[in-house]
Image (spheres, rainbow, N blue to C red):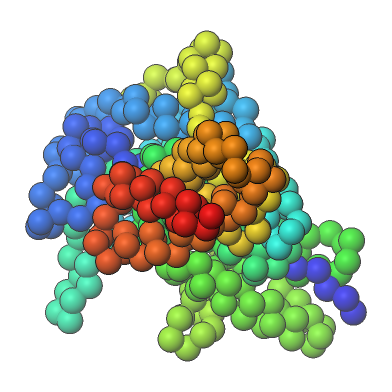
Length: 395
């Protein structure tokens, strides 16, 4: 029996707005002490009213545009009800049937193949508080409660653990290019739940298993590989999964552990949020955001391969950092100007000079930045001089 792997992802990205989503408390990833940045609104006190953060709405739409989504003309918030101790109101303000962004498509290179992954929706919601476990007790830190998250839901278009990992790395690069999130998995700025099932080639979709507790790209890849093997054995034994379930990833043991039967949407008792008016998004506002979009990493990587005859690995590395990629183009431009001024240097030598500059930027320069704990901006004058000197020395 030949089985096909079906993978979809649900990704939460923490937005770097100055304040939380529905109040004026500071939005920080790490505070000096627990419950330092809280107020009656984000603590869920009775009688409080939320006021939506306009910057969070704009950045959600920007992320949606970057992922090829249609921006809704009319969007609403909804209450998602479930009982967890870290949910102060007893419900989460999220979006349900009228999200901000729908029907997108993302691109990712898997080797030399340009894979297309459909995006079902991108919506805005508030984060929960954080449970802090000690030997004696579990305490709740509300500094994170009410901070803005975007949730990105893909269609089940991924077919291998490697594709899932590559997609997440591309999404992280996109968030960096938009400069709306640190998108750091280790710090919880980017969190992933992976949905996986197997089916006979061309058959109907089977009940999915959701994998949680994935805190690195490597963990995502390992957990999916393990789950494929586990489910293959179930299929071979004639007992494939018949219900959707949730499993947690145990990184030390290298295996998933059953947690619970997965909730259905009805279990959350969604209903419209009565305290927040609907969002009406004018086409002119959306168009301004579209114009403001930078060249995105996938497009820049593809162009660098073509325009500068760059090796795929070099193009991916140099375009991971938007500042480095932009600076590299400035260096390449200066190389062109320098060659134009030198009658003893032929135009056909420009690709070689660009290759020398690329090697410097990806080698000595990156080490220089790392050793000095500096950014590209801190070392621009130094690297420009060294790149040009390196090129001149080659002649």
